[in-house]
Image (cartoon, rainbow, N blue to C red; front, side, top):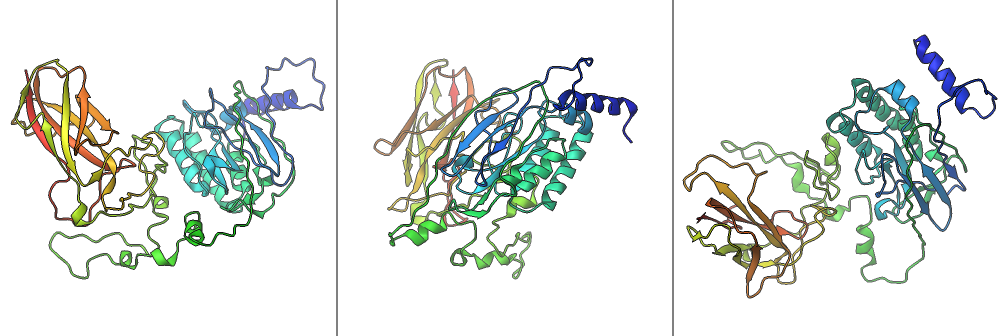
Length: 446
């Protein structure tokens, strides 16, 4: 049962927020009011990735309809569902046009507190929010329990519709009407209209923010035949039987071997594997607490195209001057260097590719770590290094380079290459038994 104090507080808030009552005798706190309106069944609403402060506002415009969403931390929701630590009230939005998608999808409303890209499965977003509440926000136990209940409520609503976002938000005391947003497929076509053509959301709080963005979409028929079928498959959300790896269904234990363990198995290419772990989707981000990446490994390089590299300066066991600029150089074979995608937005976000010669399209890195001695046997901490450089330039006469402009302090060091595909994943080759695809040398600075 609610305490008398809480009932009195809620009654006061009800009186203060009601437009139908005249209450001049009450001393009501100043309020921030936010409203959601949807003009037609094609309305869409979303959050901006450039949200400022603790709230975000976004406007998505299509050729068919418009809607506007503004959100703020809900004081009443916090009092009921528990403190959210350093984060705002958990809330999920539903819209088309998120992250360049043509289909409708879900996204955290406040990307400052819950920074995650959009997903067409609300469980991905809800699980991430609940995990963030625990690990990052340091929310109270009541809030964590409420988040679990919110996820359950979302799953009970019509799958893939804005009603799921409404159910999740309602658990935290926030009323939204994303059920009115029409559901679209990955071709931008309306699958089902929203449950209503308009809706209103009002919350109270002390923070507001405004950011806007726009999207225009059109659909037309195409007369191109060529590769249209293959192109369509790259936007499909179902697995084509032609790429089904039937061998994945075997765990490898048909012929047991000492020390060999059973493999995970799948009959659908592990397309939904990330639903089995409580981790956020990598989504092109470098998430230090760990994540799950749904991107396939891609094209595997043949044995005739395995990369190989060798440092030419400093060479193994060289001695160089302390605190003096020098240039690292490394000879490299079978890697089309100079292909370096945005590491903040596209990390591990695309499969490995090869060029027409079969060489991996990618780049290299060099990392220098300090040792206690040249014969040190203790493993090093990968979080600590003296110098690191991602080399995004092309090799010149088969050699890549990196300038160490400030030099290094006196000591002993090891230096290693990290040869990678364009999206920063380690290079992948056709066989398990092969020579090192990277190089490592040891040198002294004095």
